[in-house]
Amino acid sequence: MILIKDGRIVDPKRGVDDVLDIVIDGGKIKKIGKYQRSDEYERIIEARGFVVGPGLIDVHVHFRDPGLTYKEDIQTGAAAAKKGGFTTVVTMANTKPPVDSVETVKYVLEEGKKTGIHVLPAACISVGMKGQELTDMEALFAAGAVGFTDDGIPLMDQKLVRQAMLKAKELNVPLSFHEEDPAFITENGINAGESAKKLGITGSPALAEDALVARDCMLALHTGASVNIQHISSANSVKMVKLAKELGANVTAEVTPHHFSLDESSVLEHGAMAKMNPPLRTVQDRYGIIEGIKDGSIDMIATDHAPHSAEEKAVEPMWKAPSGIIGLETALGLAVTKLVRKGHLTMVQLMEKMSLNPAKLYHFDKGYIDEGADADLVIFDENESWVVTEEEIASKAHNTPFIGTKLYGRVKYTICGGEIVYEDRQRYCSLHD
Image (cartoon, rainbow, N blue to C red; front, top):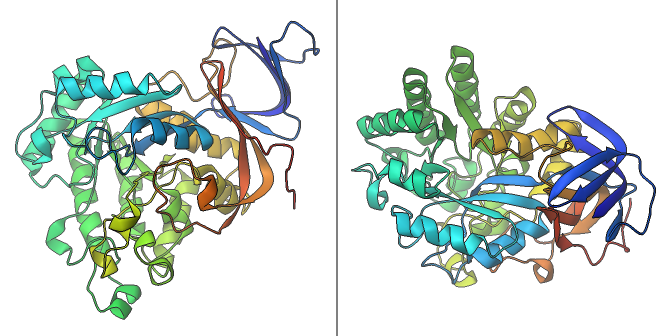
């Protein structure tokens, strides 16, 4: 048994925010209350001053496995997840080969079982991610796929999209959509705005996202399917999601920490390290995203953890480099620093965005702290400041614009299924400002 003593327990399901103890036994939360230290416990975690939340859940990660493991693999991706406080991740399907077969679904699941956390695959919506023919969604779901997405490539055949939604509704699984219409994009990864002008390119306008978000919100409304808008970046798209919810559509939206933390000017400072799809947009878009996080239009914070090699990101001109950044190890810190400390969210609301709502999307019985629940927990010091360094990164890739950034909120322990899968070895050297 493990006793977590005197932690600030934050449970978004019941709205609990109180200093209590947790007893873990057999992979489950056995008791919550006040208990004496004793020899009956194999381990006592002294959590005074620390937040104890449900294990974080990321609905959008790229582990590049199979086929692109020079960027990342399931083991190194999971190591980054554990260090970031995540106990469950949903992997994207744009691997090599893509996750459009039962065999590939099973491969990801089997490799995931070796990591100590829950690594669960989303499968492709279309065969080969070519946008022409639906996969055998029923067989892929039966094999263990938790949802479907062609993330990385937008689906342009709206008839096919509708067919996918109807099938997903039948299976009661979510679809996640990458919303960027290539018809409007000249150079991807950089917003069509002031920074693009300074670079001498046209870039990617918000219209590319807005047009497809509007389409899929309406298709979701008319099909009744569970539709998740991935990595939302446009203030207009946030408003469309809000309207779709008001109309009764079963639509959710996720946002990345980089989209609520940075704007298009970061490309001029960080180059390809700040290039992603969809791109960082205007200051006004960032403010619109924060408002969407606050009012519930945006349901989840997801990293879109996208590892690339140093050589790939060094390609010149930089707008030809691949898009995407890593994010699992900085997500909680950015959320605490940019959202909680600035008063946009309470800690309960943050755990809702990073654990409970992601669990709800995929019908996982997780994302909360209660007696009898799985002992998937994150313990962190919301007041400890730390600086992002390359030396500390657990991911195989280091492509992030946040190197050198001071953040608050350092993960102390990650517990999955009652097992301590990550422990901060610097926990006795806290820096409180």
